[in-house]
Image (tube, rainbow, N blue to C red; front, top):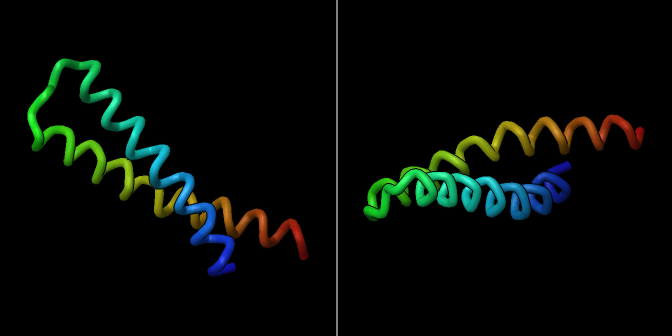
Length: 62
């Protein structure tokens, strides 16, 4: 499951971080701190979501 988790994490982390940055920029916050916080928040949110998806996929295969 670790390999599946890492592969899914590489996709979901970049996607959610990018969504966070896009939202911050659309709201008009152009400073570096806001952009970095949005990217970090997206990365943190991606961890439990990816763990759940990987576990669900692994359980479905068994």
